[in-house]
Amino acid sequence: MTDDDAPVLLVTGGSRGIGAAICMAAAQHGWAVAVNYASNKEAAEAVVGTILDAGGEAIAVAGDVGKPEDIKAIFAKVDAYFGRIDGLVNNAGVVDVIQRLDEMTPERLDRMFRINISGTMLAAAEAVRRMSTLHGGKGGVIVNISSMSSTLGGGGQYVDYAASKGAIDTFTIGLAREVAAEGIRVNAVRPGIIDTDIHAAAGRPDRAREVAPQLPMKRVGTSDEVADAVLYLLSPHASYITGALLDVSGGR
Ligand code: NAP
Image (cartoon, rainbow, N blue to C red; front, side, top):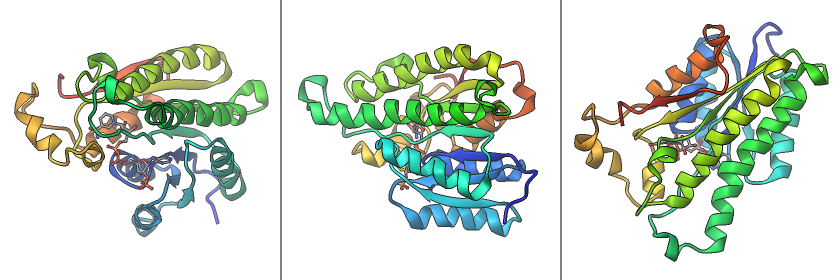
């Protein structure tokens, strides 16, 4: 059963790391939450369980945002369960092992851009089809999770990932202007180095601890600190903010 009054938020990649923190913070702020995950059902169900235990509302929704048919299925499940959608956080994203550009394969680039760019854009398209007043919707809000790497370039580490986040910045500005008169705000948060599992996927599980001394604040950020910024942009406190790129990077 759903509480008809609660606004509904879909968080892609909500099972772990930054996405999980966003799901839990959103539930605390009164959102009913659809927790998307790619493969880690157990982690997604743990996030849902935490929200339900605290008296909130949540469901886990499987789906790989790198697959257009899965994105359709994710939104269909949200439609069927909640019957509405008011917010989307495009958080799902991947890195790959550290390589120079001249070592990268076409397959690596395809996967990176399919998940990080096309996944974000296709999910946003589904949200716009439902939220836009042009389509009979009531408006809504989209937050894309970019990265400070979009400004730093990722040289010597993963220029493909950084370029994918540069695309997210540009897309955020463009879509914000495209749908601004249709009741939808679109913003991005650009985290710096946050202590999550993502660094292990790049072959550097200790990256957060290693780089901390080089950061202006001499520490990495937490998923909760990113979630706070996302919740602000989702909220009516940000009602005149669209097309903004909010850095949550400790000055990096
Ligand atoms: P993470 O700990 O690796 O978690 C990734 C999450 O995304 C998991 O919930 C995972 O689901 C999900 N996911 C991965 N591929 C997916 C796909 N194809 N479809 C749907 N879900 C997928 O990552 P994170 O560090 O929290 O990063 C979250 C976002 O923040 C990403 O966009 C990342 O680029 C960005 N970011 C992170 C940092 C950082 O330092 N951590 C810095 C800047 C930006 P499963 O649990 O099912 O695998």
